[in-house]
Image (cartoon, rainbow, N blue to C red; front, side, top):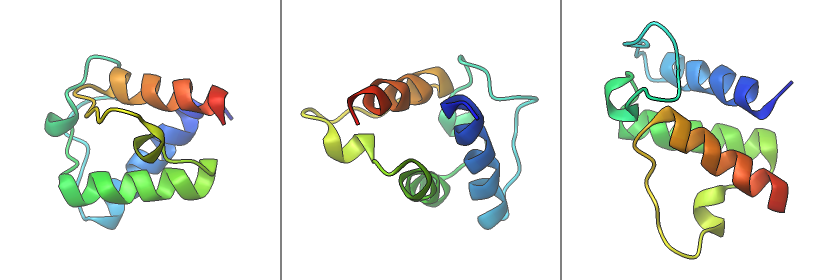
Amino acid sequence: MSIKDIIIEKYHEALSTTDKVLLVDELTDNVILLESGLDSLGFAILVALLEEELDFDPFSLMDEPFYPKTFGEFLSLYQKYSKKN
């Protein structure tokens, strides 16, 4: 399973955990995270689920804080740090 597939799976799991629904047809690179259905709690749950699954948290590995605005930026962040891990 690719990292993108894992992130999408965990994204849906975080939505379900917080009783939210995906507000877009699909998670494409240009989907704005704040408009996708996840709130701040859901986002925190997603990051925790991904850390559990992937065994790293890119947000704690960054030298400078960065908050991705789109799903593509979020995915790229995880892809970048998966290669360093």
